[in-house]
Length: 333
Image (tube, rainbow, N blue to C red; front, side, top):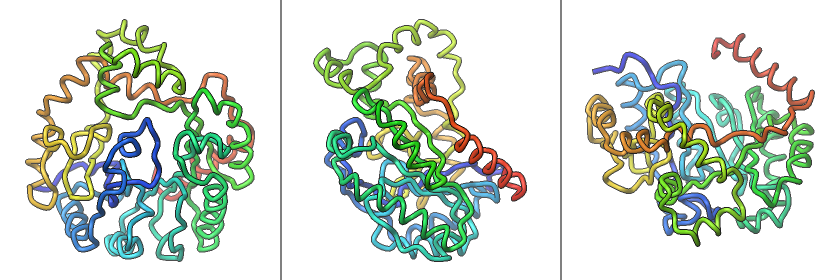
């Protein structure tokens, strides 16, 4: 049966691992950091089914990431060719470790591209991603230039993750974004390891673990006050049902925050199961009831935010207005 309302966003990990070793990320802190990738043949089967069964429509964006680094895929040009054959808009999020092959086919259906940055110095990169900061900065500049050189008119965005040790690097990174004409989004880094995050919210995180993470992460002191409003949090309507999350194996995971390889969080496989059955299973997943009931869902969806002290400058304001106008005139609002 064809789904009547396509998803606005589908997160599809084409690569199951990442080169970065971010300690607060489920991928970077685990042994699965450099796991496999989906083959172009299986990706084509999955995409064709998603389109045929109505999960993807003209307003959908296929985001080729969730826990993985998409630019590590060994045949990214073929993945993009398949996307273009279906005339589907797609998005990328990258740490800019690698520059892909950029040509007209690459930008043809590219909706937006996100650069994930953990600071604006090698010192910050040594603490989080453990990659080369100068290389990342140079690659970001090159990717932006090459995409625009092939006619790309869409959005570039920097997601700058703020830690206690890099708050002074927000302004230098914003200046870098302004020079390139990139949307700048500073936001608090969060604990992105599911089991520890749940323990943190319900008050069961070991004191030594809390001490370790509180040295870097901001906002942890807000959690007790947030959970005092538990009645409101338990009535929270989780937006995850507006999205679909797939792994490099075609497994559909209940939501984007959950570990991808645990059976209790999987709803089926897009290559093997009817989409209708998968979505019906997702509506009944016990983890959802627990997540909403503990207030965790409400906390997750409100914790990724910019500091109250951050003020958008004129250049960033103009970029936002230009983006809105482009979407209005392209019919993609």
